[in-house]
Length: 286
Image (cartoon, rainbow, N blue to C red):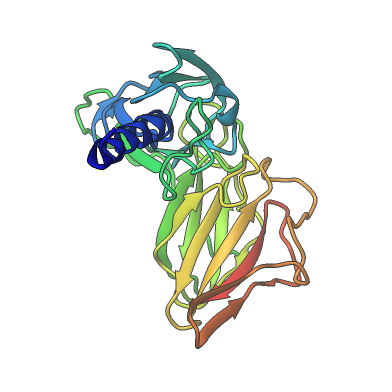
């Protein structure tokens, strides 16, 4: 065989040998979701995610697929597969709350049937739960104070979320001057009223305002993140889940992680010395 013929034959053989391997190792990608991101959906909607190839069903669990409602918290339900294992469908065990935003997160641990992982950043999208049309005719039904024995609190934000997991939305006020969170539990009787007095305040930073609920430790209970300008940090308040449980901390100061934004900026998580019944708090400077 001529020398150039041997080279062509070797090249074709090499490409043929590696072509199947390249195809099998293709990174799985999300090609469709239902609901479509940034759209509205009914409270009882199921959530479907379709990939461009079959997924490894065992890679889908409560850690790799996390669904969180900003008012209802971590969603529980069942996952089924269809379309040759290209589509997973999550059916929630209870409806979402009207008007809330629902966040869907896939971690990088989700894998294709050949064990190839999705992109390192994972995949995320969100949608909003529909509410019924209303006449917008509001009437005052109650007046509440969050002061107690405190001269001034200065409410500068609030969180509406089911903090005790009874299916009713509770109210937490974010207070700048008293530097704490104060929670009113829903009376859970359909009246729209809240229990009085509020639960024990949770200390946070001074001049706190922005806030975001989330399940930051993935324990199924709603937590709250609150930054504070004067104190210069972000406080992570870990929820207990029932609103009245004994004090419990998911970790201790000795095992709290450190975080850094640059080689010259580091932060260590610290815990308050007193822990109210419904939450514990840690702070991280930024």
